[in-house]
Image (cartoon, rainbow over all chains, first blue to last red; front, top):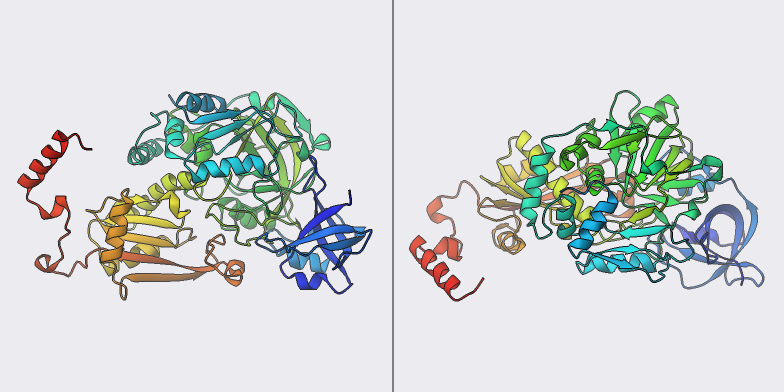
Amino acid sequence: MPQEYETFARDSAHLFGGKEVVMTLRDLTPGRRKYRGINVRGVVSRPPRPGEAVLWIRSVVGNRDPAPCSVRIVEELPETFQGLPYSDFFEAMQRA
Amino acid sequence: MVPNDLRSFLEATKASGDLVTIDAQVDWDQELAGIGRLACERNGPAFLFTNVKDYAPKWRVATNPIANWRRMAVAFGLPADTHVRQLYDTYAEREQHPIPPVIVRDGPCKEVVVPGDKVDLFDLPVPMVHDGDGGRYLGTWDLVVSKDTKSDWVNWGMYRFMVHNERLLTGFPRPTSHLGKMLLDGYVPQAKPMPIAIAIGCDCLSHLSAAATFRIAGNEADLAGGLRGSPVELVKCNTSDLYVPANAEIVIEAEVYLDRINQEGPYGEYPGYRSGEMGNAICARVTTITHRRDPILTVDTTGFMDSSATSTSITGAIAIKRRLEANNVPVVAVYVPPEGGVHLAIVAVRKGGAEIAQRVVNVLTVRRALISKIIVVDEDVDVFNMAAVIHAFATKCHPGSGLHVVRYKGRANTLTPAYTQEERVSRSGASVALDATWPPEWPRDATPVRATLDSMYSPDVQRRVLERWSALGLK
């Protein structure tokens, strides 16, 4: 079964274009670790590329874009981002 | 008798017919919470799940402990059919007699200790509450302990916490919450790591106290003692100087990062929506977990008519009444209907009018503004009778001059679904008093008379009608 993730985006447009972007992915592998989070730098493709992990994009209210993508993970990042409590998480990811 | 821990509460609700145990396997991924959610929406029972998919039978999950008035009554040690008005009166009376907690050396919550390097949050059957949430929420019906850096103030609050990975949690105690205030005003300026303890599965009145609208610098443990009529037994945490209820099923000890953040949310919240309030949260690293040998994880399947709706209905209404009294508003009664998702309050006053309505909304939005609509009614309207309230609102609130709006920035409720994303980020919003009272300047002889039995019939006719009604066997 191919690896499958989801991510949440305030503006999904910035994920596309073939450039590397920083994201938090939720691992959708069934089992007791489902929804485990990892922070990564990766490249998102739509339509999905063969051999890459499937990626679903959700909005900030949790709605899932029905069109699947794929993600190529370039590197796994530290488990947290630099930022003061309550600072904007999406901006922190962009700075990472 | 007040149940003094979760297990005795579950026994009491089972005896009153308000708890259903499900021994068949249920999936923690949405199914379990979906059952609890439907129960909230249909005024159904609480559930105890004894067989959670992927988890050993020693782990059990209980949903929505006091999400309706029957179970709230049981938590107070009252008959399950106690009227909500009496529950309000009981809370208001007991709240006046706080009892400080007592320290004990040991407790059931210490039966199993998982040290920090062995902690794996996925060992707990944390449910995926709704499809589309940002992750699995561990803190939905919890009691989060934190301590002020400058005083003896210990805060208990009910705040949501999400599992990120084996040892990391992200949470959303709002910046305007008491925990948020302690963090931003104390720990961050002093660059001092902030310990917290998330206690899960305590006695219900301790959780109710944590969820209560309570004064700054007030210790909710004292309130819990008052509501219970006996002191809460507290035991020291293993990795900090915080104290938690010894009867807790599970305790997650953690430390809030001062310079690190992570994704939190979105989450289907108590107003009944998932509003996009994600991206501004806190991040904490778990330092140890302690729990009972056969622990019960409590979950509030958050949304319309959840446990926070009933909890805040009582505690919020009493707090509103006391605050209005302190500000010389001639308040008679307050009701926060749970159907309003903690956004609506009904305030009955002895003397109404525009000036009073404006004062009501001003007073209730000074520090933080959780309630955004306040219907102000005359004292002859029973605030617990929503049919009467709607009648008064629909007929007495002047559509042109009866709305009194206050706008604010920096203290709005970011979970209010009506707000735009921009308002959420800047915590900007508004509250309105809907004045459904007669203007006091109207002469009595020109004020409309309500066409109900108790207003438009002579006392003698009322008596005869009621006697005949009874004689016919009608209720």
